[in-house]
Length: 280
Image (cartoon, rainbow, N blue to C red; front, side):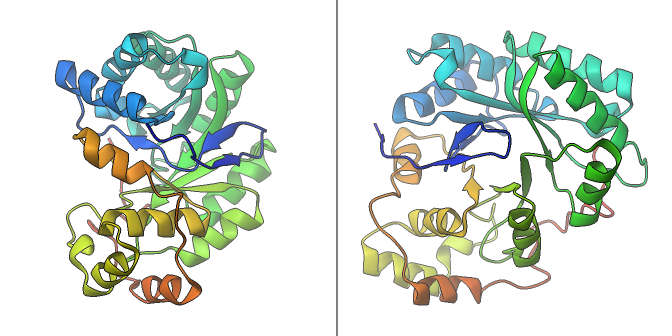
């Protein structure tokens, strides 16, 4: 079990681990066992979403785990089709019913869906749900700076987290800097590239060999040193362990620079630009 995991403190005071566990496509009884195994390995931050249709599996893994609920941080997300205020409130309640939980530690708007233009209304629903004790911390996913700025101006409430696509091929330097300047923690989805051959990159392979680490460990350590929270998914406990066991070494400035140089403007894996992409 990995125990030396760093923590970040969010702008609302909630402390979260520097690495979380992604649960996308972990469903049913098999998913429960994988998620439960991740908890046993040492993960305490579990990322889910209404649209993953696995909030029930996450909740069941929490119940089967020997780790007390209060030591875990469970995350879910509001889908694009339920941004209208009343629908958003009902969806948050439904998320809790699905998981069999009394509260979520973090709840986020999954995508802004700008053409629908209800993300401020959705944000107001998250604010209300937090007041009701259904959520401890509220955040957003895939929100460009100007959308977050609008949320703050219209509600006076700042997100605690902005979860964005982030990996060495698309390092989002400007968005990360904006988040940091506004005391918003960056969280990385698809931190290992999600099928874009990132882990076979020659420079990353060479850095991994120098540190006697896997390429996954090198990339995840890069995220941590950027101040971002990666949420890798892994089915085997060995990979789960390796992905969390990244706090016994550091990348040099030169190595960080080599990884930074891999980024390009067209580096999104599936071209999901949040200014045009719409989530159902």
